[in-house]
Length: 90
Image 1: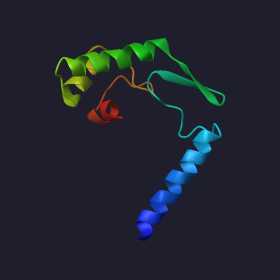
Image 2: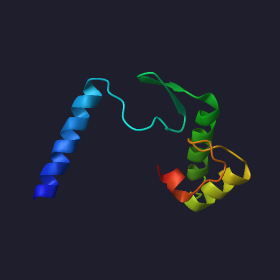
Image 3: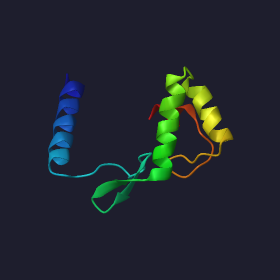
Image 4: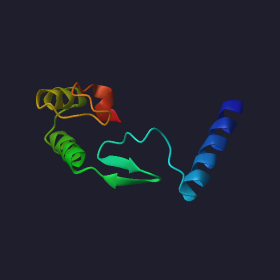
């Protein structure tokens, strides 16, 4: 019960913050760069996002997509070239 209440409070607080334009996290969102209090599209990373989506539509799973992106030396949101399944699932 307490866990559920805490979860509800956290979600409500996050919604209020979003409604007020507060950004969360470290800004590492694949396809975007954080500039001040907003995000702008990073075209190179956006191409990687489109590639991930296209590979998924072709029937590739997360592990294979990570392998393909690593082989093609595409950078993750944090600038790494080695991709993992968790990078894809985010």
